[in-house]
Length: 241
Image 1 (cartoon, rainbow, N blue to C red):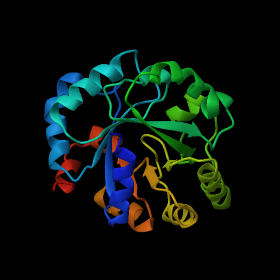
Image 2: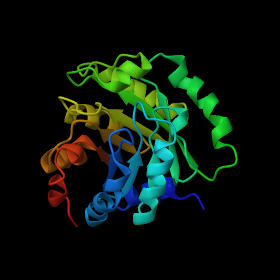
Image 3: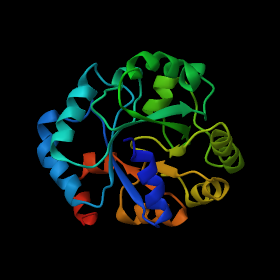
């Protein structure tokens, strides 16, 4: 039974805030999985996201298979390309880069992915993906050839997120980018959340428990953290159960 999205909604209805740990197969050694996932299991993390902007073929499949050996947490694909789709995961964020105007990342990649998805049991979750300017160029910009929405254009960000919902997206993801100089601001998060009737995910540039809590207080239903753990695994100590 496909329950990842249903469980996200149930958690939100009960007032629970969700935390996803993002693991990039291109930056993570499979040999590190047992120790790292043990720390994830001991933390308040509720989900594990796997994906990156550029990943070698089969790297995602191998990593997900290893992760699933050590955790019962949902493993969700956060793919930068169709080559990162593996049936070993529990779910797939079917990302549409609605902040950009590159047709490949609005529909082209999705069409190309269907042959890989056919016959799998992956739970596919349509997700409106918005890249927000953070103070430096991101890998997403380089790979997709799109520009982020300027942070000061709050109305544009809100309208784009709402358009995603009206198009049928089940999640909206506000992304500052890996290693962002500035995380998504409280004003942006609150403004977007006020307009939505679907769950809001926020990621990029969150490096402390204080920033994490600020994102939650501003309206984020789920926060995604990746670089903070890559740079300082002691961050787990702040997020232990």
